[in-house]
Image (cartoon, rainbow, N blue to C red; front, side, top):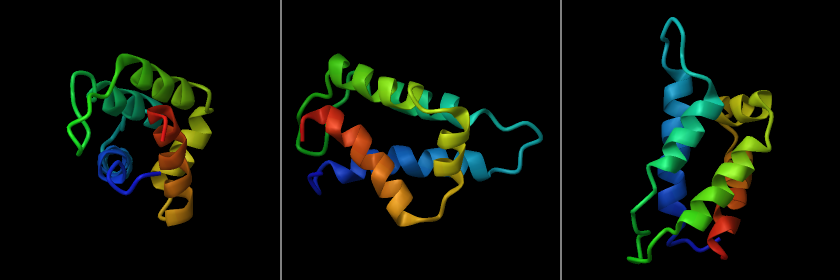
Length: 97
């Protein structure tokens, strides 16, 4: 994955981890948080000013939707950089890296 694309996905991943770690009485499911974070990319550009296309976003959504809730939750709660990088790489593949 390009290091220039990493901040965009790192931000989404950090938000997923942060929301999952919040001590709410009923935190939202990790999958829902991931989907909402990806949806926020619609109409935006990456750090190089390149549009993030609807097709790329749909691909990212497909990646998350293909995972079980337990898999997404494990990623959200993981402090393991290898696990987080693996998830980020799956999403970045949608950008045609």
